[in-house]
Each structure stands twice: as structure tokens, then as C-alpha cells.
Amino acid sequence: MIDVVFQLIIFFVATASLQDQTFDATLKLAMAPDGQPVTAKNPLEVVIDVNSEGQILMGRIRYDKNTLGAILKQTAATYGSDNIPIIIRGDGRTRHQDIKTVMDQCTGAGMYRIKFAAMKEAGQ
Amino acid sequence: MARKRRQLEGEAGELNLTAMIDVAFQLLNFFVMTAHPVAVYAHLDILRPTPGGKTLEEAQFTDLITIMIFKDRFSINTKQVSQVQLEQVVTQLAKLGKNQSVLIQSASDAPHQRLITVLNMCAKYGLKNLSVLSM
Image (cartoon, rainbow over all chains, first blue to last red):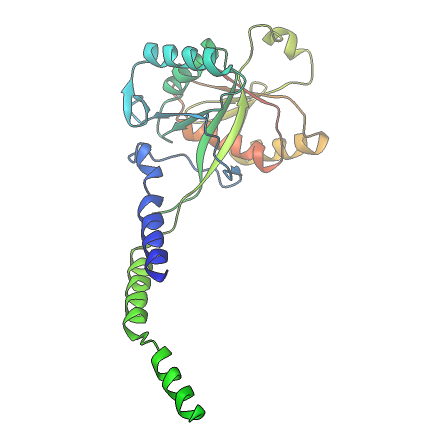
């Protein structure tokens, strides 16, 4: 039994950091120490990274704005535009113009509620 | 006779835990040495203006407060303010009501950090009705 417990501990510790690998690790998120902390993850949420050069990434794959718009429209058509939480993870140095491009694609797909991800407490 | 049997049973039931405890401490050491603080993320909610919503001209006649973000400065209803003054205004707004509408307009060349700073300020004082527009 103890062997199995150790195996489980190793499994959970090894896989705990895999979540972060789905995002662009080079992003330096803007700081928002008073923002609402993220407690639960919605499995339907769409996370869009915008790096300091204005490139748009989802799951570390780069997309142009037209492809992003098409994906968002398809997602909205499948699940309903009100049910999909959109989270924009913008680098603190990104120009607002590049964030606007992503927001415009979201509104184009009928998604008006948007969340900006920021860093509440910095890790390592 | 009975005491002897009990002694034998006790000896047979003992388990040497030394090796297992050694491994447990090795694992504990490993995880403590390799652990690092986990970053805590925050979400800042905004609303984009809907096509069927109020136009900006209509909204300006109501109590709408407009915060403008530029690359190097902030302004409230076209009056230039410092970040400290902006925070004071946001504090006063929050005292009037948490549902106060705030329109945040950001210049194209302003860094994203500045927008987050303003949203963070609004979140700090509980303002929830935030719309973001781009200039």
C-alpha cells in the first residue's frame, strides 16, 4: 500500500507542472496584486496569449487574427457565446493595439465578457 | 507455554521499517529541494461595448466616468491626472457606489501593464461595471 501511495505522490508532483506548459512561458504577465484570485478553472475557458511582440498564441500554437476569429466563431456557435469565458493573457509590455486585435475578434464572435489574466503574486 | 507462543508471534509480526523511512526521507528531501513558489494568477473582468448598447454620446450624459490611458499619463474625463490622483478619484467613486460605470479608454501605443494597473485599482475598491474601449 505504501508503495502505491508513493507512486501516486510522484505522479501528482510530476504532472502538477504540466498545466503551465500549455501557456507561453516567455510571457511576463502584468502585475495586479488586488485582482480576484483564480480559484477554479472552467473547462470551457479559452485562453489566448499575446506576447510582447503582439503574436497571438493558443496552447503555444501561433495563430493569425483571422484564424483566431474563425476559431472563436466556431466555439461560440458550438457552446453559445455567453457560456465561454475568454481569458486574455497579455504580456505587460504588449502594446494595447495588439490586445485590441484579440478583443475585436472576441466581440466579432459575439463574446463581450472578457477576463484579463494578471499575476497576483509572482512565483519563480 | 502460552507465554512462549505469544513471544514467538510477536517476533514474527515485527517489520523492519528502516529502509522505507530512509526512502521516505529521500523523497521528502527531493521535493523540498526542487519545490518553488507557485505563481498566483488573478482575473480582471471587463465588458466590451455591445453593438446594441448605449452609444458613447448617450452614455456621456449619464454619470459615466471615463479614464483614459496613454503611454505616459492618465486622464479622467479629459483632465490629466497622476496615478496617485487617479487612485483617489477611484476611491471616491467606489464610495458613491460599487456599480458606478467606468469607461476605460486605452491608447494604441500604451503598454498593457497600464490597463491592468487601472483595472487592478478598480478591483481594489470593488468597482465592477468596467468597459474597455480602444482609442
